[in-house]
Image (tube, rainbow, N blue to C red):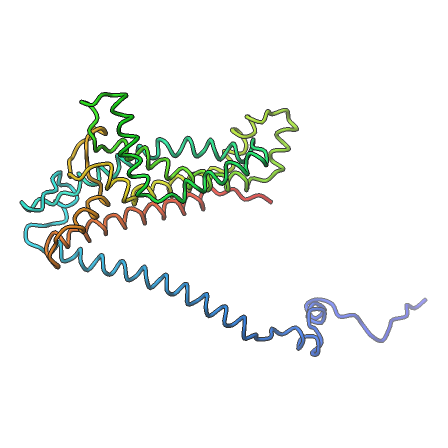
Length: 327
């Protein structure tokens, strides 16, 4: 028997896909995006906000670079001595930045000594252990710590932490102004930042990983330490680096509690001036415009800007490199 074929043959191959993909003209007309004045205005406003932030950053870099260049063009000043010198005495043309950098790193070290372990413990507790009632109690306390003005922290370091250290180690060991007290109180300031960012990273770990570990007989501590913590490592590392950047740029605590002399010392119980503390002290005095002391402030500020920018870049690279992607 002969097979009967319909006069209309089905299109095969690319032509068939073309016919199925093409929509009728009246449907395509209705699917076209319609311009809306309100949406265009919102997009324009958001673009304006982004442009303002970029222009502001460019302006800051330009001013810092311009004034810092004038400083390095001054007689008796060169970049190598600035970066490697161990004396900062402008009145005798000594512009070694190491004493200020060393004090900055010392206060940052003591701040991280407090902020990292306490911040991780708080984040783990809030993410894995705390009940809703406990979270409602602890969250406002952390927000209050984050909202206290830094000048209050500075006087707290001077009037409470320093007497406490002198009581423990002795008045002849601990100076009234010292980097240890400033750094320890700075750690309390940074604690809410690290704990909040770390908690967000821990909470982003899928619930299925926890349930799988519980199904295999793991305890809550094992799940928190061996499953959740490694999975959120990239976010925690980024939180720590952001905290370090925050500590390096802190001003009022170190200006009040750490001292006003650019001493190159590794003793945390002695006074030493940080980069931000020196900027505050010098800029508050009687400086003539375009003098070498005035321009040195911008050189220090430029170095501080570069340090914090590098830390932020490292933080972003760590997040991209070690971020876990779950399906």
